[in-house]
Length: 182
Image (cartoon, rainbow, N blue to C red; front, side, top):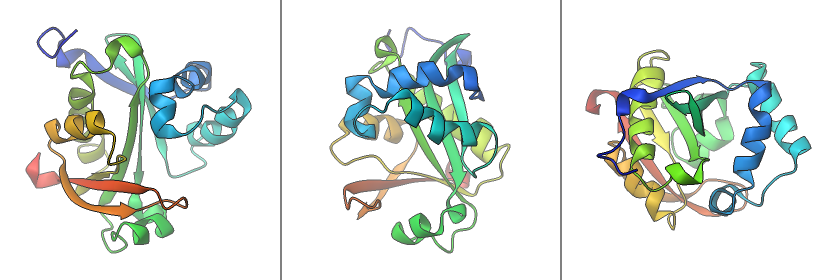
């Protein structure tokens, strides 16, 4: 599948459910995903991390990405201000309308075909800007993740700066899309 052979109108999102955790566990253990998300977690770790998100006990809203009715990946969003340490680390502590996004294409056959850019564009517009009222969206790929960076650029995100945004001190590229730019 290349970008000319899929229909972006078939991309949709639904809240992640407990029944989806085995699938998410499989995806997080795929070598191409684990390279950027850390070593593949065991199932209990996945359940401990994502079940509270599903239950609405954390500020992170988890979603399954679908192409038609087929699950293809995971995407989540969160208001940056709900994570003050992270907001400070990326220089967005005063940007109360900024929301963050993290995503992965879990199905190997769907990676590298342009679907990620289309899914990010749709999620940003349909969920984060339209439903949540964000003024800007931020995403922070590892600078060596060239495939993700190109997809995010195709979705309209622009490089802001390189930062060390997590506890490990690993660098990330902070990328931003303003509401008025979409």
